[in-house]
Image (cartoon, rainbow, N blue to C red; front, side, top):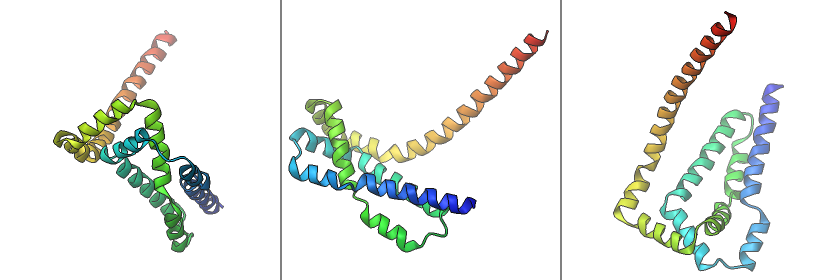
Length: 161
C-alpha cells in the first residue's frame, strides 16, 4: 500500500514537472511575442551565471530521486518524461522574471561581470561552494538546536522552582 502510494505520488510529481516545463501555452506565447533585448540579455545572464546549468542539474536530481522512489515504474516511462521536458521554455519564463526585477543596465553589468575571468571563476566554484555550504549549514543547525534545547531545559528548571 505504501509502495503504491509512493509510486502514485512520484508519478504525479513527474507529470507536474513535465507539465510545468513543457506547457504548450509557453511555446505559443513565445512564438506570438518575441523576446525583448532586455529578456534576451536576461536569458544570456542565466547561461553565464551558471543558473541554467544548476537548474538542469536540479531537475535531473529530482527525476533521479523519483526513479529511486518508484522502482516499479518502467525505465521507458522515465525516458519519455525526459524527452518531453522542455527546459528552454522554463528558461524563457525565468529570463522574463529577471527582466522584471533587474533593469536592462543591471543585466548588462552582470553579463560583463560573469564574462570576466573573475566572474567565470565565481561560476566555476559555485557547485563546490554550494556543496560545502550544505555541510556547514547542517553543522550550524545542529549546534543551534543543541543551544535551543539547553535553553529550554534551563527554562523548564526555572519554571519548576
